[in-house]
Length: 226
Image (cartoon, rainbow, N blue to C red):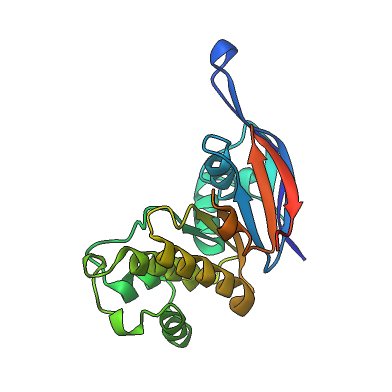
């Protein structure tokens, strides 16, 4: 079952001599539960692509369909609600609320949607993430690796259609990076969660089911790397 489709996505900045084609006719589909890695050098358009897939930016031309809905056909408020319910984001910067503890940070997207947390699921998540004993700790009391686990938990808490992870290991050492990659993989296998992850690390990309290479705004499907 296809859950996300990018169709002839183009993103252009500037005009004339300053024109930059960040993305050029990018098209691909992602199946439900698939773990896809996007690799490429700095400046290749990886973050631009992720921002378009997540509805954080608009393309110069092209379409993005998530669960068969054209996200750029939505009005701003409708898109904001859709994004909150259907897309989980994990960034290089953890973006945790410093005044909230681990548990509160994880359930925040649910509360913002005026819903009640499924505490059985939240407790399970905390256990899977290795955070059960730190659920009442503030972000300042956690290591970088633990903070990124909280960010992953927050992304998973709403059971979104897709998780978009932008260089999630960028601020972490090798050991914590492996843990984060393994947790993203686990979310795909255990919870059938669809994940698209940007990384410049080919070793981490090899954990994914499929790898897309992005260079000079053009995507090439490399298939599986294992």
